[in-house]
Amino acid sequence: MKSEARVVLVTGASRGIGREIAKHFALAGDKVAINYVSNAEMAEALCREIQAEQGEARAYAANVANAEQVDAMIDAVEAEMGPIGVLINNAGILKDNYLALMSEQAWDDVLDINLKGTFLCCRSVAKKMMTRRQGKIINMVSISGLVGTPGQANYAASKGGVIAMTRSMARELGRYGICVNAIAPGFIETDMLSAMNPKQLSAHLQTIPLGRIGNTREVAELTEFVASPRNSYMTGQVIVVDGGLSV
Image (cartoon, rainbow, N blue to C red; front, side, top):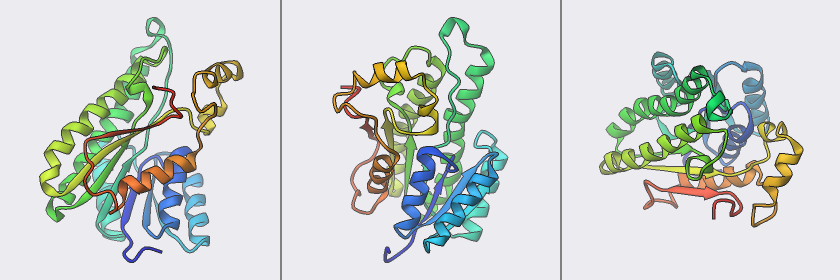
């Protein structure tokens, strides 16, 4: 257990990478706020799992694309758990399609959650971190925001936007002792990946130098380091964890 537990807010934490990150931080001794938008059952189940292992976690419902809900969630977390020391923006959605077939609604939905949602959470938490002159913000992005990915114009634009926003925020917030970084996973073992066509997945595997899919634990451990006091002089960076896929 850590000598001093921090409050860590993880958005989109009821499943996948967010779930593993939330559990990893909680079992390392931090107090974790688990954000979800609709799947209360999975979020509460994760809280019970963490509590059964002597960790501390609470679930908070909020649509990250709604400013009022975001501000209310941040206020509730700080009132019930304490000052937020780490914000991990993990909430995100996919609505893939080729450009000529992509609907305007699919574009808007992905940009609202992935880009606007990250902005709203950062804005709300940063106001509080600035008064305390400390904090860590980590934005989960994707290699799709760094390299061309067919069928993901909306997703790539949203993640590329978050990368640019991360660098801008790092320059703004550094004077307040706040570090802002991004983590860009490649192919990671999640429910989303398991739904991929096996032939497509096999083809992608051939392009990964390490020859395998990553796992959520590897992403969670990297996230914990980026958020830790051991990492005190890195800000505005994008750390890629993709087995060499984007090399």
